[in-house]
Image 1 (cartoon, rainbow, N blue to C red):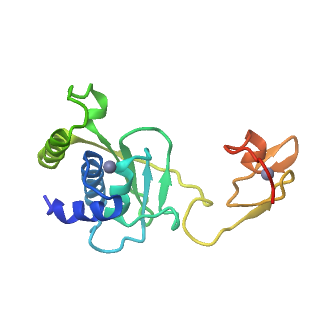
Image 2 (cartoon, protein in one colour; image 1 turned 30 degrees about the vertical axis):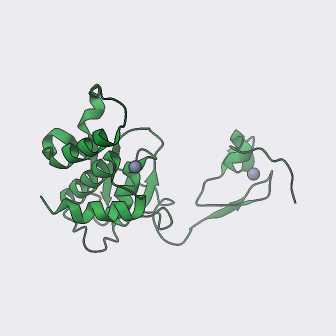
Length: 193
Ligand SMILES: [Zn+2]
Ligand SMILES: [Zn+2]
């Protein structure tokens, strides 16, 4: 195995500490890149990663791979799962990696004491890859409006007037609407200045 500590340090810098999620995310990221034949020490412009959870693990994957939401190379799928898919945009090759223990009951522990955390981190660093991770070759159908690069299309919501990029509008009763106006937004306007 590559020297994992080098990558755990990246995670620590980005996330603030090395918790169990950072170790899992780091191992998932290293395994994914290895499967795609990519070197995590160099910039991989063709790497895109779909992360299936917004927890510690996601930060490790960002720190190790260099993918970011702003470059459109990080896609967030709100599945609540310890899993991520690594896609090589130049070849279309993709691999989904999930934590093997997400399929079984976790061991009972006295919740999150510091000592326990350290032991979990140590265990997760040591455990062989075939026990920790499930690796599946997959296909990802990435749309032309999801790839990095200049936006190819823009429209305006007929309800709120705001600009919408990348074909995220919806047509409802013949009107072009943003998702907030079509489905109801996650926020409630209190006052417009
Ligand atoms: Zn954490
Ligand atoms: Zn709107």
